[in-house]
Amino acid sequence: MKIVLLVAALLATPLSAPAHAAPHHDTVRYATLKTCAKPKEHLPCGPWWLVLHSGRRQVLADAQTRALTEDGKSFWGAAPVAVSGDGTTVAYFSKKTRRLAVRTVGGGVVHLPAGAVPKAPQSSVALDLSDDGSRLAVTDGGRTWVHDTATGARLGTLPAAETWLG
Image 1: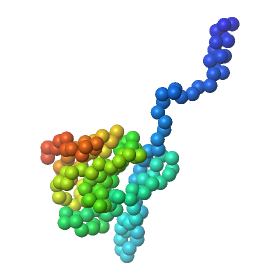
Image 2: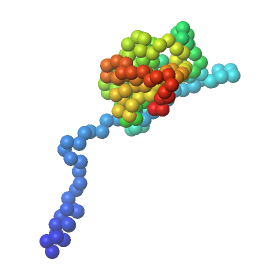
Image 3: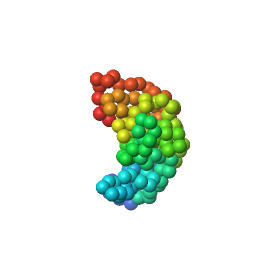
Image 4: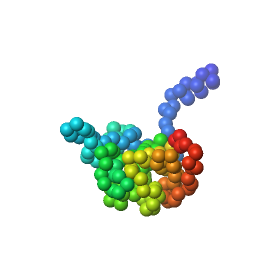
């Protein structure tokens, strides 16, 4: 009889999250960009938008929309953007500085140093953030550099014979 009462008491007790559980923060689900139809082509236009897990949308106002060529001219394709696996970090090329920028959701922006990526058309650059957003891999047609996102420091370069798989 005591066991039955104990089980009944446990089942009647509401389950709640422990007091030390972290509150849920809205994180990025994906980044999206509108295209505008021009005669015989579709071009990226407008700002990048971050779609959050809550369904809210947030403008990524300081991100380049269109990729730039080696000499800084606008290219027809979209500039690269990456979102970390946990949705807390976004990497992109800054409109103002034209350098790589890493933004933390609800936090600040770190601009990677000038020359962090050798001159190349941005259309050939791929950005890949680690799951927790602490590392950024920048690939440019066979070469890959890995950066610390908190400081912007280059942590290493993959040998040309190696392929970045993400």
